[in-house]
Structures are given as C-alpha cells and as structure tokens.
Length: 469
Image (cartoon, rainbow, N blue to C red; front, side, top):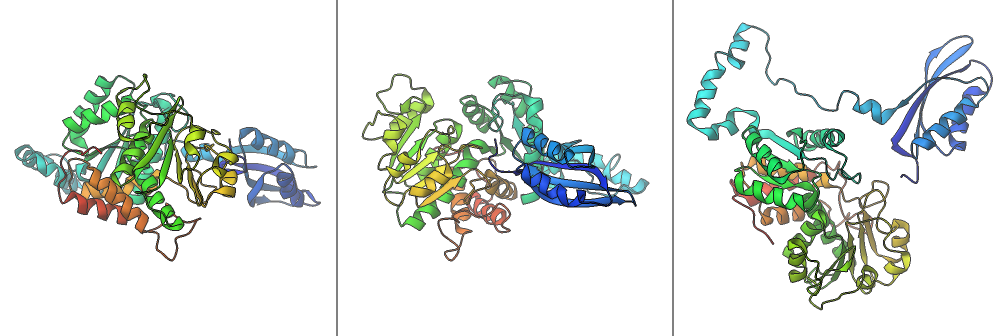
C-alpha cells in the first residue's frame, strides 16, 4: 500500500460546477483536504450556467481515491458525472500490438510479402535454418514466458492475471531496446509441460525471458531449457536482479571507500533472486557472506537443506553462524534484502558497521523503512520509485537481450552478467556518484546501449552454454 499519493492510483473525475461562485476554486482545496494531490484541472466545456471540468489527482489507494471523490461531491453545486481510474484506462484492450513493417498497398507488394514470393524465403531457410535470424523476426524477438505462479509481490495468481504484467514487460523491451517481445502465459505449473511448451515454440524466437515463475521450479525450468535450446534463456527475476544489485553495490562501495573482497555482506532471502544475487556477488569477488532465510542463517549444520540451500551453505558462512537475521546484520558492512517487509528495525541498522550500505529491495514494503535506514546507513537503496537509488530490473534486461540478439548468442554466461553489471555501474560518472546516486535512472539514454555493448563484446559473436558460479 502506498504511503503517499501515487500516480498508480491516479483518477480523473469529470464533474459539473456552477459557472459563477466559488465552486471552481474549492475543487483543489477539496482534493488537498482529503490528502490527495491535484495533477491537472481542465475545463472541457463552458456555458453561461455550468462548467464541465476534469479533475485529475493522485491517491494512496482505491479507498483513498473514493474518499477524494466524496470530498469533491460535497462541494456545493458539484455534480459528479464520471470517475475514471487512469491505470485501468491505460490497460484497456492491452498495451501492445503487432503491426506490419512493410506496406501492403498493391498486388505486387502482397505477392512478395506473402504467396507466392514468400515461398522462396521459406525454401532458403529450409536449406539453412540459420537464415531464420536474418530473414525473419527471430533476430529481434523474445518470448516473455510465465506460469503465473510468482507475479510481482502478488503470488500465485495464474496466467490470465499475469498477462498485464507480461504485456508491460514486452512494452519495456520495445521502449528501451527496440526488441519485439511477446507474452506467453502458460496454464500449467508442471515443470515438464513448461519446458516442453517453450521448447516447441522456440524456433520463432531469438531469446526466452522467463518471468514470475516461483522457486524452486524456476531453477529447474531454466536449467533444462538452457540444455535444450540454441537461443539464450534468461530468468530476469534472478539474473536481472543480480546485475542491478551488483552494479549498485559496486558504486555504493566506491562511495564508502570499501572493497567487495573485504566487506561483510548479510543477505535476507534465499529464493530465486537471492540465489542469483549471491552467485554474482561471489563471482565479483565477495568473500564474507551470510545468507538468511525465514529460519535464520543458512549453514552446513542445518538438516533442512535442499539442493539450492546446500549450495549456499557450501559457498558462504565460513564461520558457521547459526543465529537469526538480526544477529547476522550486527557488524555487517552491507545488507541486501530480497525477502519480506519489515524484518529489520532502525536499531538493527544502527548495529551495522560504520558507513554501512543497505539495499532493502522487498517491494512495495522494504525489509526496513528507508527513512529509518537512512538515519544510520551511509547508502540506502530500495526497489521503490519514491526514494533515491531505485534498483529496477528494467536497467538490465533490455540491454542484456539487445546484446544477446545482436551477437546471435545461443546462451548466457556468467561473464556476460558481470560485464553487464560493470557497464551499468560505469554509466554513473565519478562526478555524479554520491550516496543518493549510485545507479542511473531507467530513462538514462546510455543505460541500454552501454549494457548491450558490454554483453555483445562478452559474447564474442556467439556464446555457448551457461557457466555457473
């Protein structure tokens, strides 16, 4: 739930007021008195007796939006005609579309784009399948695949409810990297069915972006698809998050003049994102890491370790700490949270090392209040857009896939992920770097191109397989 008015709960209220009197001037006051923020006030029709006005304002949530409408209706002379939720209006009919890149104005153009001319192109590809990257949309198309089991912070809400999120992802691919992406929402959560379905549709795509598939199923799906397919398979919830965290941490440590090889890092969260972040941090040189899940620190002595947790226990927590998260945070230089809201307090952050770095990335409610964390930590980052240093995967995945597609890569390597993180960190210049600017804006014009160039160079034209940490 938003604590301040947000555009994601923006409404437009169409109403009528008397042309004379104080009603118009009272509209803004009514919204503000209800705790909302007026972002626009437009007179859409004027007469001698009545004015029709659209009042656009931001609210905290749906109940708050209704309270604002009630406050407007209470203004003397106001008649409410219609209330529109601007977020739902944006989604009406979907957010993406397919359109032709070639004109079809006459018989000649139709004959080349479709039959009989298209048969020549089909036969060329039949003789050499690699020509599909050159002569079809495959060279620039990504499938965004989900089973709807772990959508945002909403949980297992199913494939239909996942579709608006996958549409949004496709829109981001196009906006930031010029990539044509398409949502593939599967009505199954069976690993074998997911893998087989993606395998049989793969010829039409140049890459597979796995999205919002719950752990541990996502690990198996990704591993098997990478073994089966000759195109890149990238689980953004894992590796996109890891790239952004490493980039931000690289710059945060520069701010506090510490090194990744020597700092103590405490992590909360051992799921898909936490696992991938950990592996990339270790690959970047981190040596002293303790990972906690809801049962406490992951260590070799625990008797509940599955394959993923066993790997974590074998590669972290060398001293065998077996306590809880609060104990693990004491004296730590860095906290990285990809877990649950409100699990740490201001006192916990105060117990960290001097010049601590706190990444509280649970969204929308972080592991610790950003305001509380900022009282004691030198650098604070969140997954939210209403605080500085937002860790947002859109900083990574468009550029990563742009580089993979340009290189005609057949896989993703750890070296590519490290290259992407280093390139993203480098977008922030030394002159810009500071406690409130360790990661660039998602709208920074150099982000996608820098990441794409780094991945393309790392791919060396064609990449094979995936190298684990």
